[in-house]
Length: 153
Image (cartoon, rainbow, N blue to C red; front, side, top):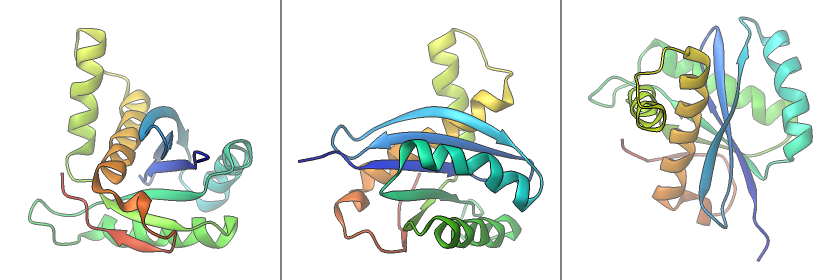
């Protein structure tokens, strides 16, 4: 069985954390954070990453309130996911990202022995957290069509 590559995104209006992983090892690693506040800059930065990794699918964090109801950023993340699919002709899965940044901070603090202050590292690690949730949910074992994976934090 060949491993399929997945790219995950922790979408923000100014920064987008990116992680990479594969479904064979069900692993996820922080890759980078893109700093961009408009679509052209975002996709100009993301394009070469997509070309290098050639993912089978994208995983985008879906923000919501603690009770699971959508908020303003939910619609923006959905729009970003649709743009990813349209530009790169690659399926997209939305995954619950609640508390992923806090979890990323804890992960980095354990690794470094201190609380991280580097927001770029936190954003990339949050994307890795989102991708781990995707793998933990088993959604990668389903056909690769666009769906919102119901993954809770």
